[in-house]
Image (cartoon, rainbow, N blue to C red; front, side, top):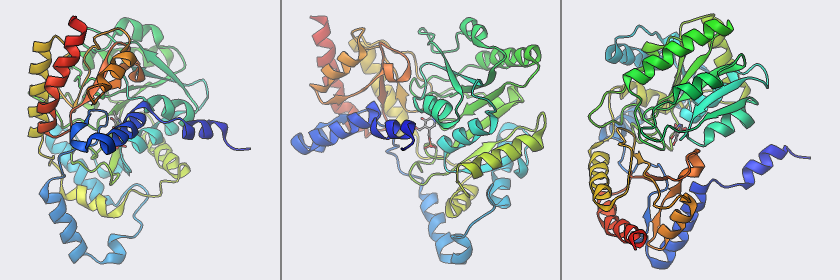
Length: 395
Ligand code: PLP
């Protein structure tokens, strides 16, 4: 007898993976350049040259036994210190290295934090649609808690506070937010964050136990003309789950961190994070990339490509009649599908080799996710096809 949950998860491919496979099949038939794959969030902009230079320097100068050996489970202290110093410089905070735990990316930051917090199968974590679909797996199958979904606030994808307040109860252990968002690209406003913080403070008092905010921030640095509020400054029970996958285009290298707030019984919370990392068998984050990120604080990949792609798509969509909440960050947008059935719409888009992901997968029917971390040339060639698709619905 095997773990049935694991077997089931292992057998079901996510829609994004299905589309990715379909794209490969079509590419073999009609050529890769004729496939307009907007399905996957793999940064197409390379990591900055500085990252490559630093890797070469480290490999050429460091003692290999140390460079590739184990580090402390939470990451080498000097690497954690470099991150704390950078956060303090940028956000006017006062963190130290003992509040950081280095991970293999945001997915690990989330699973470790969720496992650290969950003490009963009745514990609930609130997520806001449209959400990153893996949240449900991480909460329910990964941590054995319950996911409570708040439906989308369609007009702007900010938080529907009435429903949110309604769903908080004595079992609420935490809330996950993701701003800038995958899939909508929406950035929560200062007002939203302040109100969220106020409610969480009140509700923690009302239920006489802390409610933690897990702020999933892989896209924090990818924004266009707006500021992303630093959430941890607004609510002191925020656990920041960060990753360099997108900001430095290091998705395959697996590196990120958890920032543990100095609140409540800090020593216990930090120990729970270390213990959860241990339970899940993470051992330590990759040693080489710990050093790389410590030396690359404050850098990002060249975000101008995403900015250009976003501009072209938004302008094009507006002319064609696609309606879309303005995405101020990440490299995703989440327009309405031109028929209520988003899956049918995505099927129809396939006729033009436009590969889009149905919004239903993110808990928001009637939308599609477009991941625009692709070549600008791809966007330019795809726009006439989006127009042809829209034309079908005008008839
Ligand atoms: N959270 C969100 C919202 C994401 O979009 C992703 C990846 O796409 C992750 C977490 C996982 O990121 P990582 O590659 O750092 O594990």
